[in-house]
Image (cartoon, rainbow over the protein chains, first blue to last red):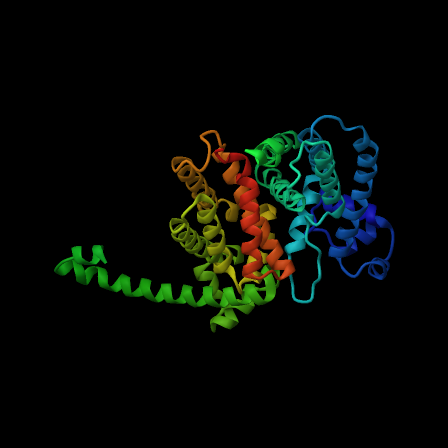
Length: 190
Length: 216
């Protein structure tokens, strides 16, 4: 069911796909879809969660081998996310839009609340502080928030300007460097 | 009123009739827009139908379609007038700022204050802005770019006053300010944040974004 839904959301579009079509493609009855999921929005949420499992399996393999400065490491983590999500850009954008597509009684979860990415960014900055690259008095949760906001809104480039992951990663790298100049120990001392 | 004063004599009688008709049309549009605003706020963008909007405005769906091509045009019209008004409020607030941090915070706050109590509408706008077709029209609104420009102007003033260094990458930094300004709306929409909470968050964000640009 989830494979069928993912393919249809990607090729036909989320709004255009009906639960009936998902059932037909998966070779199950419409009723079976509804015994597993309350709504189409819930199917989409599950599809996205499953995709993230693949991404984090990949990241768990890669992150221990990341080298370089805090800026380099943060850039790599965000770049991997952009590269991953833009493999299926329409699907990802449908996910963002669906979170806001509010009706009375609906209870969808907004995008950008990605606790694992947040955790990774947090660990990376905290690790930088241990290595003396980040000022001791830096407000790490706040730095993480600021970076996450920039990360999330850079997707507008994919949505509005058909930007590829390289372009998004390049801008993100400059944004990280810009924030980093504020949390570097020398800047704090000055 | 300037153009009215220029019309004299018999020319005035010629223009009076169409003006009155235009006025009636204006009132019909205003009535539809008020009903649409109410329904978008309570039912969401998808949930509000033209039929419901027409009923709430006390007219036929045909009368609504005589004034607006479709639902997305209705929504865009509401957003356009709101965006224009919020930009004016933000610009006025920024002028009262004493420092670059203060000016930016006042601008952010004016934006959040404007939309206080209108979060369902904000949510509908955020969702729509990400959709392929309807989003195109929303993000093409010049006010989006003008808001980033407003932040850029404040940074430039900060450089002039010697608060920020000459090499402070105004373009990138004003974009980041805008990203963070927008990112707080989902907090308000989904987390029910108060205006005070949004201001406290904004103050911190502005500090982090400007930290690397201070002269020192």
